[in-house]
Image 1 (cartoon, one colour):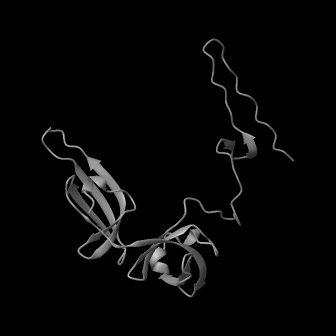
Image 2 (cartoon, rainbow, N blue to C red):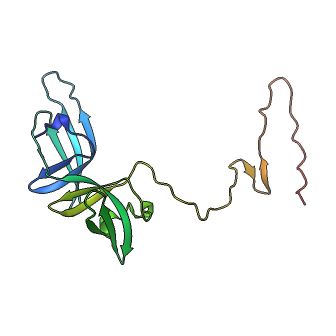
Image 3 (cartoon, helix red, strand yellow):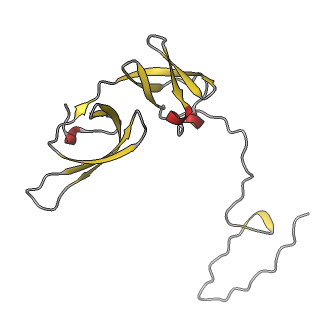
Length: 177
């Protein structure tokens, strides 16, 4: 049972029999000497995906959830269900689109390096790898932020006027043909 001072981002804590993952952790040290450090924690419920904010003292004990982290590979999409294969025992798990809504744009078939959060033989969620290789299919044309509206591609750089000599504005350039 970890203390509140031992909590880390990504740990899974059992709160009232429901697994919660730590998303944010903030330590607040009080100004008085005798007071204890408070830990503000933002959890995500792994079953309902609701957020929960809680505060703990440094010596509060929390129960770590009996959750397995297993490497999986994204296999395929069937309707609104995303299927993942466990790389250790080749069992398959499915997750609804709503459960991984923020992670869907980064899923590519046969993507490896995904960590599955499994509890009681049920997939609760996934953690994507640190980086994912994607192909850029379409993008808007580039435009330099200092370009003049009428002269695309030519930077608009104006020298600072000197205090010693006066500068005269240049005549406008003719548009390119």
